Image (cartoon, rainbow, N blue to C red; front, side):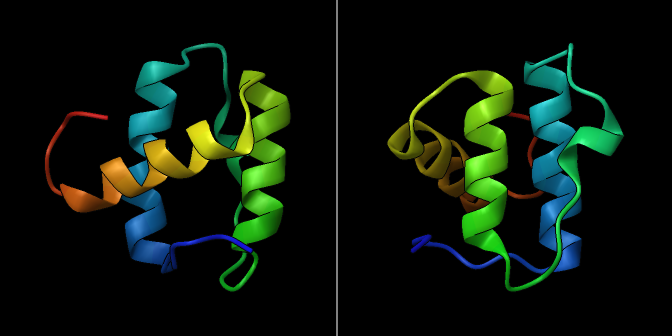
Length: 71
């Protein structure tokens, strides 16, 4: 179970950061439905070829400074 919660607004900020970090991703690759955080983590694991811990750490880091530019 994911250790974070996303809203559509916070996901938009995190998604922008992921798109900047992983330039080979497309907007369509990063679809998210509220309440489906676990599904999102699995999807991102496959797309960026990283483990679950890394994905969750990266999302939490982005959420800590949602208005900033850094990921």
